[in-house]
Length: 141
Image (cartoon, rainbow, N blue to C red; front, side, top):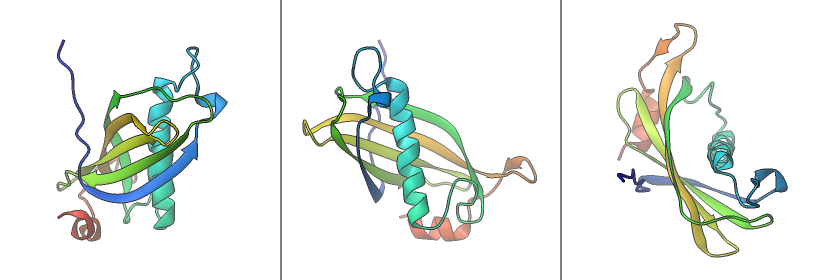
């Protein structure tokens, strides 16, 4: 069976630490697959808050998520401590990718790696827009 493999890359911009909650668990008593995407979202919003932005105002433009990929590596259990490393890469004229690595601090293993593709969007015009120049200048290497 063909598999899509995520390779985490880019500029490391942030680390988010937390502890798995009971609400993160599924019926198998480990981290639910749907909760991984929520942890990615929490991580990137936490980072944006530290630089005084959010998804409706990121360098003066809104962001919409156009895709998501996740590779699950090991289980996470209730109470496990984790660290999410956040990276930015693949910047083009209208979009970029966030990459994530969730490390289970308790077991010292990767729980998941993934990416979310983000596109700059103008809600007033209801259309995709160009990436802001200050964003490109700061993160394109």
